[in-house]
Image (tube, rainbow, N blue to C red; front, side):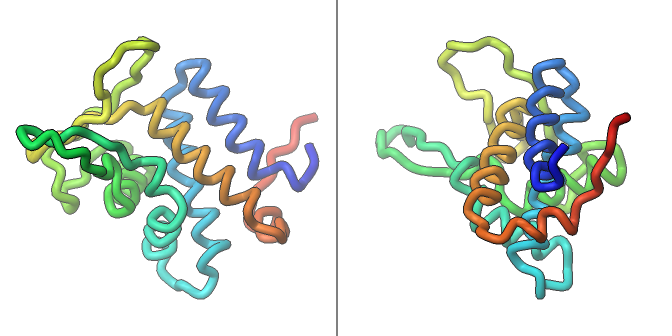
Length: 170
């Protein structure tokens, strides 16, 4: 593998994990992408959480924003179904504690599912005051898309090489 492809290879592996229905693997690796990108984009920010959330807010928020019709006014509104703070909390809970316990973020109950029924017309990114219901496939793909777009926008790829651990196969 070319050293320049290490970061992009992570994204490829996430997509392969999703195809193989290895959702925990895909989610774990996806949640690390903003860590790498945030460290590159905000190298002078000392706190990893701040880098992560700043990067997410700057580069990933649009991937997690949906237009919906507000009732009864029927006004079209935009809302984020996953915020930078929620993604950071999910990352910390899932990677460090192995669960989805994000009590310090105002979400009472998180359900993450795999939406595999293509073509159905219903929202599978649901949230209200008591719970959220996120599609792990869409969540992972959106993080990959944001990270890949960011990668291609960075002229000097050297930081992606220096900050990555490469796994060699023989």
